[in-house]
Length: 476
Ligand code: ADP
Ligand code: GLC
Image (cartoon, rainbow, N blue to C red; front, side):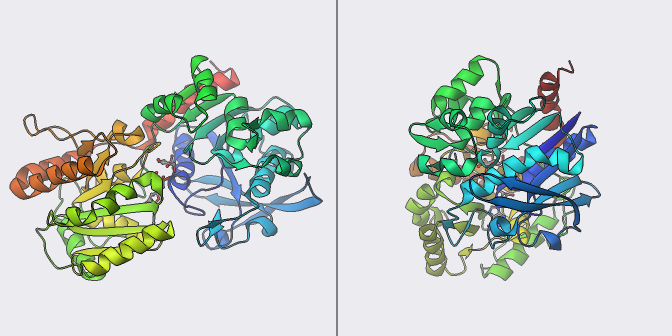
């Protein structure tokens, strides 16, 4: 069975959020299960610094405008297998992936339509002929649409994984000419008067998955306008929720080269050294016993920053230290810069994108805060569990499926959970965590170590995709 992942991101070559981690790690886990998987992503600026590239093919694709002459580059990773890159500098040789300085690129419709179209022509160009195109999010949702309406041979199947319904690829109907689709294809992806690429993907992919069972249920009620089509696919048994996993080759404090001191569930002592070093590096007071609360996140509404901003002073008055790593909405960036300036020695804000600091914060923090408004899966809470940063989360999507409230009577649970999207509820959960940390250090260590011992490796999640692939190829 041959599978081609087609996506806008793949770590470590191109990553904005969890999508990049998943495209990297899920494909790797599938390879370990014996599936022949390759990936296809754009060649963004800087990819050549991460992997050696060789030209393996050429494509000339004509859609709305004149022909686009593209090169196909290939990199081979010792663990990750083959990665094909679409090299078309006018679209992809840019400083960003989706945009720059908070502004989305205006031509992402054309950019990602080219990627989808090129994916279908890749077999002819490089000789990797997939049985299934496993596509991800709106950026590659045109693959099944081109398969259906673009005059391609129909034999390959498609599986769409939705990582986030908040991004659908919605464009005005006047842009349709750019897609090179017949009238029938355009009207099939027009939803509520606009081109909607994710809608098209959900409608025409042979199967649809999303990244946690809870999110798969939630989006049938509130699917950002797409609940109707999602319910239809679910009713036919064609929508599934499969939880993401963790790549412990990248995210494990026992081996992590990016943190200052290594540690594990059997020997967690090194965590204190990471905390002390982080405090020193980011200008927090050297207080070993003050609970350090961390966040690593895209600074977007989804992640619950309204709650954090509303209650920031009250959070600080619980006697915590706070560190945030993130970039995104300028108003959020500004808020955290100022908050850090107001609380010297107690709060720090790193307004940047840094893989290194993401790991260091997980390693240093006692508590990891993720009060998301919605969360399709969420990887950071799972990384936090392994790093002994006890998660405080809102019960939504994948957070609900991975974090269970601590119960002092039975000494069970792995974190602290609140239900309502509300600052009081978030503060109460954070207070439960801080109180336990102070009142009962032994119980705290048991809670922390319990989380560190959980196994959320990709293998079991990857195994859940196999029956879906088999169903599509008719192999059982
Ligand atoms: P989402 O995909 O919605 O952003 P996830 O929790 O699934 O949320 O994944 C987020 C990923 O992006 C994690 O690997 C996290 O470490 C990373 N990340 C987010 N912001 C930053 C940042 N500023 N610097 C480095 N890594 C970041
Ligand atoms: C999206 C979601 C996040 C999920 C990630 C990977 O970016 O926001 O919840 O973990 O995709 O599937």
